[in-house]
Image (cartoon, rainbow, N blue to C red; front, side, top):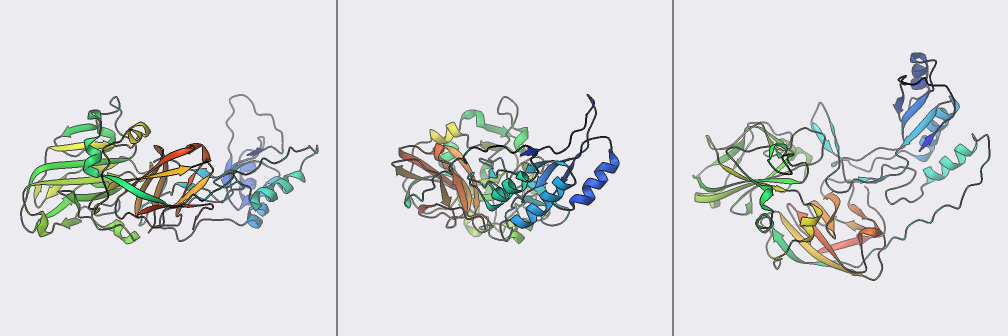
Length: 418
């Protein structure tokens, strides 16, 4: 949303400074006017709310009263402004960003919901901020205009509980990868260095490092000498050895973004012996922290660097997700697994999938990646599913879960943002 309140002539090619703010309006605009007295004033981003990170205690909000207070100060100064965000939304797929920090945790990944506590919420519904914005701006219009009727909000529906019926474990998924998504390498490589996607590397999703026919002696430990961006789940012979991710403090340990290079993982006696298979699955949490995967280092078993890896790009592109087959009956979950449910509906409507009972992963609706969930980290518990992603009849819901699965898919009419 952009509003202009004053008119200055801006010479062609002239650079114009602008302000980004959520408060301190008068001080910021006074400074901007001092820096460029002959140019228009413009708040390029007036922050109507804020975004959420995993492990936030609650959904970030700004009250309508505070929002209107600062917006009125902008208009009274007077200054032009854009509202960021005017309409919240969803960062579908793996497209969420994050924020870098100088102290622990040094990387905070954004949740998939970008509701932002904006005047129009994630589903495009009106909020109190919207109504207050309309009333406020009407006071500044020199020409009163006749406004059209407000469009109706979308219908929301909580579909019935849907049972999970089938699954594909990580090994099954690797077996169905395209050959072009498989690279052999002497040492581990970050996603971006893989010779795939017409030599442009891998941008999103997961990367799997696999070493077969590995001899693991008793009392062994595995260490990653380089950086992990952003979460590594390690398995031996298809059994997860990484603990379930539940707390922020775990990010200091083996396989996480903030782990020290000396961090190592002890292997239990079940993994001892020859011809063992070591798998390390790394998740890209979002594009803000450089290269992804295992970066600038090696994987070390005891004191020996492991060489000659098979590397697989698990990008979860829509066409690949939709053509997956050879589904298995449900059993014990020992490794990251893709689960399948079928939702039959008479009419598509907006809905929210409540992932509170699941662990950590991503959800796909008819092959479309609706985003990430992480129930232990909060604040958000739901994923928004717009009606156009659904169809009359059967709809396929797939959940790629890293740690702990539920037995059903739960729907809600309302978001749970924390």
